[in-house]
Length: 258
Image (cartoon, rainbow, N blue to C red; front, side):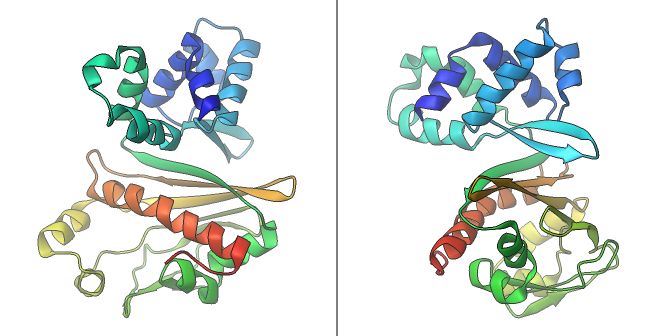
């Protein structure tokens, strides 16, 4: 938490977060074009923000994209801003704005797991693993363009648009999100009104990026393609942190979270 406060103490770094908050997933070149800062300064500030967990990165071909990660901000808000009168929190005004206006068309989360890229890949693709921490299993050959069958709560969902988008073993995996069917909704306890909202939205996608980091693996999950005011995003942003914590616990201890 100290690193987060130190990172937020600099107005230039807060400005960078504001820019990413307006449009997430920018390259260093794009960020420099919109700021009155030298490229080297922007790069140094981004390194501090990434070390604090406030910014995470993904790759699109040869381009490195930077994303605002609101998880540390949420943690600070829960510990401090909900315990004290918000009128006395003037010093946290920038932090409050960043929290309340987080990007609504994507969700990004980064965690470090004490494992290998090979084991983490297996945990993301092998039904024997995914059922333990997720309660979901996939039937697919994990080749780009291949269809996927989702199984959850005793219900299976299939659709021509449920496909693998990228598959680079031990490095990168992406696929479209599952189809919201009445059978799925019944199996997981989703009511008819919520199901109708989910079915009206465009299909989103999720991307997993695996990067070796010493004896650990840096896992970045980017779930994007949401509609404005997305119900899917709201549900997924609540589910991903718990799911990834369970994945981390399973790989590091052999037992998932309850």
